[in-house]
Image 1 (cartoon, one colour):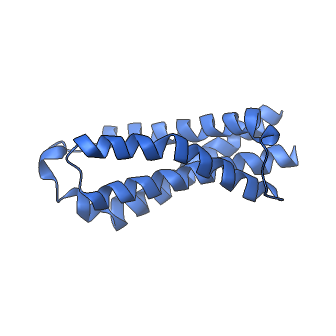
Image 2: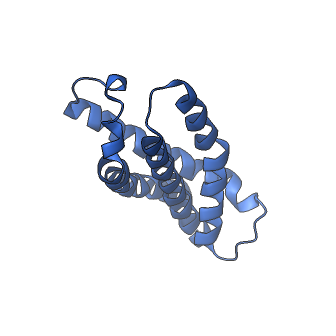
Length: 140
């Protein structure tokens, strides 16, 4: 039963992360995407957006499962479940997404503002997924 709660938390976090991702990358930092026009596909379709949404939901589910497996045993200074989830998600972001995007940005023709938007977007996704998992694992 606990695994179902973690899976459900991952799905919910994934849906919320899609909304926050739209606000961050699709609205706040989208103008920077236009400053590197030769980097992007000429057209975007609903298939692209649906696949992207599915990837983000799958990432949140995977992060939730990772937290359920490792998070409770990880040492932390945080007292409550949400703070433990936020710290776990932040550390996970710092060792995965941060170096990946920074290295890619060295070679891909992305505007720096767009890179900042992607970094913020994926930090929020990691925090949402880890905090959701921490809440259900702590409550279980």
